[in-house]
Image (cartoon, rainbow, N blue to C red; front, side, top):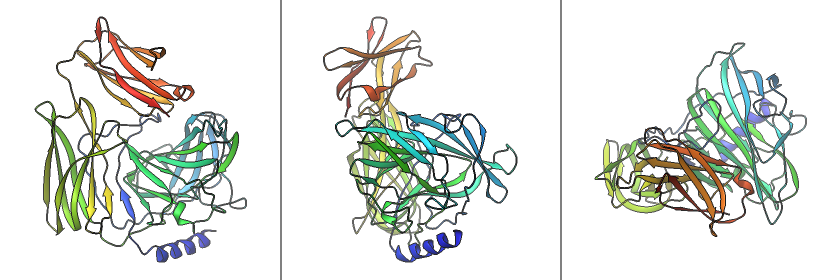
Length: 445
């Protein structure tokens, strides 16, 4: 099987003699808890035109902790590389998704060396599609031990990320440094704070075949010990079982120079309501201009400024621009580079907090908006007294409430189980004694 996979990869590299699209993002995992993690202000990104990654072999998983197929169960894959084992944890399950088979062998479908779970999604309907996911956290260990080890370069390629008339498959990855898709991709790729998501079309591609490059999605990692990979489905039928194939190998390589080698992109607050954006390039090729975009939720960006590039340059260039009268709260900025031929490349967003110094209590940010199955609320307070946060519908009826005690003037609350909340418009606010915060509008689609 390995010989067949290699021959297919040679065909892919010959066939894909075109420029690939790379996006950069960073994120963290803390103690196996899977969340949308915020980016630190100031992200240093290194662009690589070609990285050689080892080919892993994920075969014959052994349950070493927990109940098979259950949340927090841990499996060991022996010798995924020479001298390296992989411990795989089912670290999150949403909406009742369940595993039918933890790893399908080649004799059934797909590829022997890929990680291939069968996942069942139930409960969707055409009028009310449901989003399901299972999250797998991979941790690399020195073979035969519990000692962590770091792998220099890792690529994971989702094979056959497709759908049908009733459902779409999707994947979310949380700590990749870049992703790669061919120019003929049929996937919808979006970045969010801490990660990247690829969503399939409503089209089924026959078999589990690496020649269907338009529905393949490669994520790339550097100096990594732990990788979180969320396998998702947006289901409009009562029940569906889907095979996932995650091949720990790189299929896409670009030998053409990337348009810009970025060294740094950061955001800093100036004079309370202004944000200074600075970035540095080490080289530029065919670079027309940069666009600076802003977002309140890390997902939906709008253009706020643009700056001409240097065209072609092999020296260090520094850029700066100012965004004025910025809204209060957590603000995300993204840099987009545009070639002379119109092709674009978007870099990882950075976050900056713009505080309202005149308000004693405020909702600083909410995420995600639109609401999914949870809603994280960040609150700024000048006092350490308890704060009650209230979510109401458009009629003012309470939907949910939570209480917390701020630490160091700020706190976060996470409303869970919101997948059962009806579609509509909602409002979030906070109260601390007699003090009432601003009200923030959120929606549920």
